[in-house]
Length: 122
Image: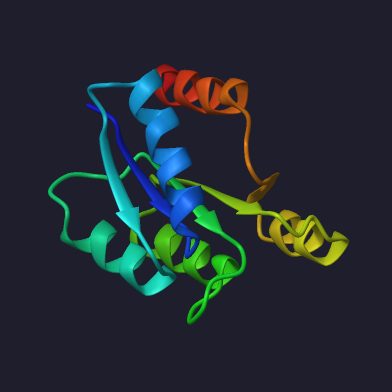
């Protein structure tokens, strides 16, 4: 079973991403976090590994880059993606320098399907 973590402080975006993942992978466990801190707690508290984390770049508290780095440090097998509605060059550069893919928000259904296909191939 796939386990996917969605972290975004925007309720509508969280709901949209969770709904798309549920449509594509009904058997997946979707963990939903309103903040980076909550995302880290959920990843630590769940039984089994999180396969994919979609983390918003701009959240109150810990930002997406710091959250992504901590998730990868604590859970090395996790595939972490940063999502942002503010597709600024510095965000791309920060993510690329750290080996984290940055994606435009909202991702398309095709993007979600591609991510899930990649997880299934691992």
